[in-house]
Image: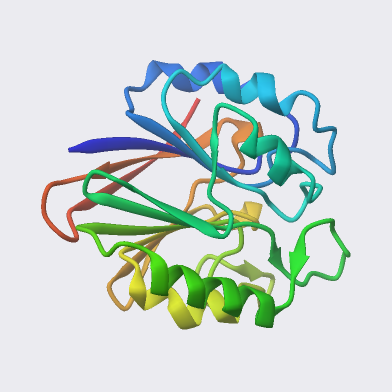
Length: 213
């Protein structure tokens, strides 16, 4: 029904983007860290080079001003927002829960919880319901050593979705299933990693392929 390319963690390294064009997809979604603490000037032209509809949220390494850049670009900024695309509803939350590194776009769990509560209350329930988040839910693709560093607030709301597309933890590339909810981290696009997501016509018919260019 619809094929989507999921990218994340470009960190200002855009050289691999063109290589993803060997795949066929109907839309691109970007799960944050488009830049590496800036600069923001290249973002508009980078997003303009994507020839299909593009939806993005910022990451914790993006300056907060990137929201304004995204909103004035050819992409759709999904931070604290949602949109229905046929039988797929996309909701988005950018930034991350607190880290030890005081990166530019961090939110408290309370702030994340407020955004998530608003999103799940407002969004249109669809055949496929997708959360595009930079931070992973706690306990899913969020391990750093022996520690889980994902968001507790995203975890609390994840059962309202069929799929969570996340990033943030470069080493946690993969696909997992938590209580019937698929979670995918495509790995850093700066290194040529991504994922293709195929949404079928029936609920839960979501197939994910990790790709490398």
